[in-house]
Image (cartoon, rainbow over all chains, first blue to last red; front, side):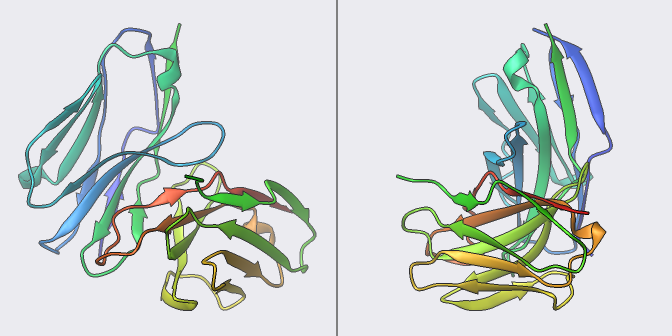
Length: 114
Length: 115
């Protein structure tokens, strides 16, 4: 069975600190896609990144970076120099190559304190 | 380019009633998926519609049903509402292409409260 685990339910950090959100996934498929979404209070899910299972190269986009480690089935997300606007719920998600169903983790609520 | 729009934004219904939620896809997108997000949880896949037919379903009972129209807009219908149906219902659209679509644009959702 496929599963996404976000062990951190809630995190609070002071503005300008770095913060890492953990994500561990389970699947026996060899081809799959991993995502991170941000959900602000308004409710919509904002796409942040998509990686496929064959691309283990880490990625950096501004203050955001992602560390994909296939041997530990982890896809962690780091925000550098956090800002109050980063406060939101963040979801890690998994999609198999054989269907279109997004499997979400339970999310991590991130509070950036001014 | 318009995004995904959902209506209504909020809704209160009584247990046992029926409800219809609506979703307009992003321009150029022909696949629509619906998700249920209970409070404090991640979204759960309900079903997907492609070319006006159901194309995949999650672990939801038959009282959850849907429609997709020729303009790719979609409806989610829930009959015999239960208190546990209270949730944020999210719609996501995807463009034509290979499966999985891997490009999903989400709406802001409909917050349904069943009392």
